[in-house]
Length: 159
Image 1 (tube, rainbow, N blue to C red):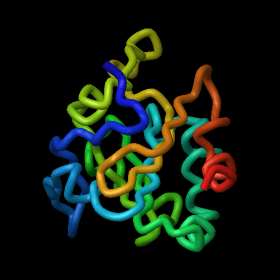
Image 2 (image 1 turned 120 degrees about the vertical axis):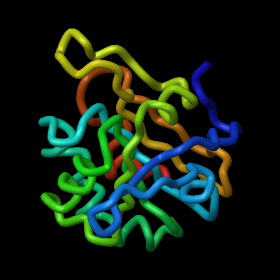
Image 3 (image 1 turned 30 degrees about the vertical axis):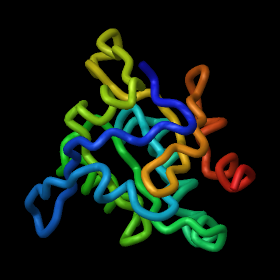
């Protein structure tokens, strides 16, 4: 079942790279406190994700914070090394928490899809959510390929 506005986010393992080593995190510990903007991408270094989605959030991180966002996080079904390298390539610094999902979070959110036809295997749908103290208050899942309702510009307009 797909997560919906009003639902608590699942509490499962995510990872990020710290000092060259993967660190295990619980999703509620990093996404369940304060006001969080979470955006999910089908794959790091893929065209739409790298040309539009992540760069929009990088460019507008301060504007999101000015609207009361405590944490900006990006999640993808990729490993921690890939997410770290992708973040470095886009200069995310400390502005965006780059979270690697082995698939558990995406499955628990009910937002996965099979991208095997493209050689990607199981991936996350593209979406953006506002999470307040662990509860989803806004969720925008892209209805078709591309970056529209989950873009940072769209998020800023909704906050």
